[in-house]
Length: 327
Image (cartoon, rainbow, N blue to C red; front, side, top):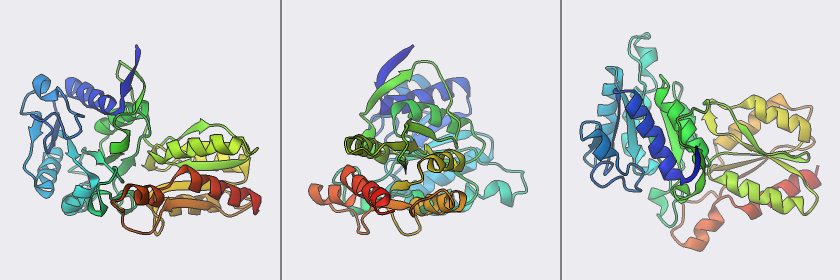
């Protein structure tokens, strides 16, 4: 049965389904148990699974991330919630120096099947230190996977696949989308990690994006359609692995490409996507790949400045026009 539920509820269903099916799965993080999660993602899970499997931790990201990595190495399958991915920077050593490298360093003896999840990017006037977009920081490290769902259906299916994966998986969510509603099947299902999807078919320009900015890309595509520019919108779903084939197939059809990435531009995911498009579609492109990123400033607190700093519909429209008109 398909119902309309919120993004946060889709995440909870994925975790609860996994915990019912596999006794090795547990959830830990700040306020995930008695408080039902800072954003109510884990509401009701303590009552169903008890305090040994839904664990409130001290305010020590490095401590509980390291504990969970040790548990994964010994055969459990932890889900670690960071209240914000900004706070994960405190745990950078264990999550980047241990989890992704353990299988390699142990010669295949010690795996690390663990999921790290939480809110990524500007959450709405949270200030510079709580608005980090960590994808370009963490995707650089070998040995991990990274998913970034843009809607409730993908949130449930991708997180379900992540929990079953034998590798460390980083799930980047958005506080601004937790109340977003969408159609989600009641039964469990998986979405393969590393497979993008065409959200809107088009013929004139390919727009590639991930996570929350996919919605801005869709809005821009509708605006541009009224001007006679038919954009195809690709939702990457997964940053690592990156579905180069789906992106390249679209660009070969449209001959133009704009990448929308909520990270800062230098050494970003958008840079990597643009490089791959140039490599795979060099003879098909009628202009260089254009990119839309956060402005190169720390996230402002003021609402109007924050919105101007982020990728938005206006900036995407301007990039598509520059790409297609100035070929």
